[in-house]
Length: 181
Image (tube, rainbow, N blue to C red; front, side, top):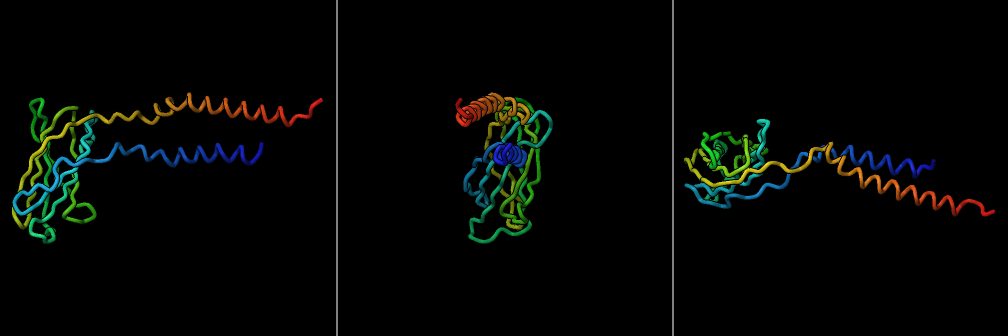
């Protein structure tokens, strides 16, 4: 067994093990409100509205707060995000947004969105400059990525074909290298 035949599978296995944590991302957030003026604030809301059945907070919201006066947002400014299903009766589910990296102009909140379908979203900002509210709508969907073990099952046929192809190449090389009698 040569060093090359040991190195390639080891490298492939190491790559798979290192890449396993990358399965946590389901796609980029998208804007649902862009630069909407409310009071003295100009608000943008980005979301990744994943529905979950296991009470995990899949509905993610990023609130970008800018000043319509060209001043820095004061540190006491706080955003509150609330969602309510529009296709059935249900109360608003609220979360207080937390500043991202201590920056009051960028805040993040995660909420439980327990089913697929349309949700009404209300973002309320309160701070030293006063209060403002914006409303919008998002469509929550389940994360459609297969679980990691099932992904391995999907990859199996491709790995099998690659293994058989490599086996054939190795046998062909050995047949050429064998002394002719």
